[in-house]
Image 1 (cartoon, rainbow, N blue to C red):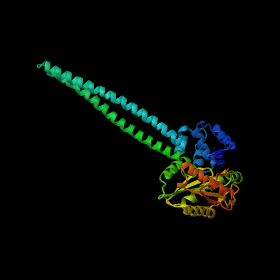
Image 2 (image 1 turned 60 degrees about the vertical axis):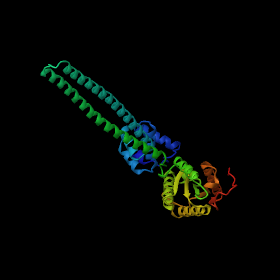
Image 3 (image 1 turned 30 degrees about the vertical axis):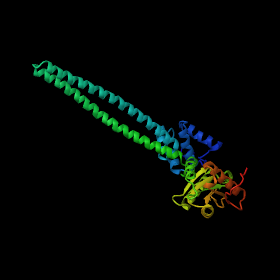
Image 4 (image 1 turned 60 degrees about the horizontal axis):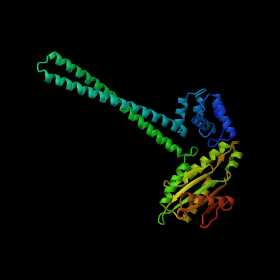
Length: 352
């Protein structure tokens, strides 16, 4: 399995036909169950972007158990495995709660039985004042026996309640982790499009004349050509490198996301249009000065073509309109390499 896993350099995000065939072939050859989360795991391992995952999957050998695969996927926080673990823990939690309910019902039944026994014994003593000491002791022994069974049952129930609560807490943490992973871009670790749209709605809703926000889009021009020319692994390194450069170039309270394979989005609060343009220029120059990546052939490649568009929140009627205006500005920048940074102007027409 080592040769098959470590020898690949296929794009993990949206594998092409050849990559799909190779992933399927690896899974078939090593008898890995054809589950969506296993496909995701092998795809990530073959991408070359996660060397630790690649080696750990290879170390499992042929016919790895599903438990081992799930543990590996969970360790590397793959969404499919996080979700599967959360579902399993939820099922276990429901089973534990069902067992606790049954134990509670049994305990209640025992308490009722004990109460009836106490009432019977008391009634017997009241009815016959001359009841013998042996008979009285016998009834007390019976009550003591029932009480011991009740204590044992309550002790067991308390233990199961504790375990059930722990399972629920673990399931909740797994669900939260799975939710977080569905809002993260797997390649860069940045928020993805779904997370970005939530943030964009919040930013637009809070935009006022006194509190302005700017949206900046940075697009890698002709990313498919880069894939074709330099290979998937080099292109993945390029995108991860860009993400790292952009993270360092902005402040902690600024927002960055990867919303498409070739597009990064930024939201900046409390700035005007001129400041947005200056920030866009700084991002462009930072990327231009710092980005160097290696192709599959080992050659270093630079001069990455980027297109930047920016627009103020108050110029849009809603969040999606805001994004649309920014895309229009970015399209205009892409069409004019001599002016790679364009800010939206009122009345600017959509580019076909």
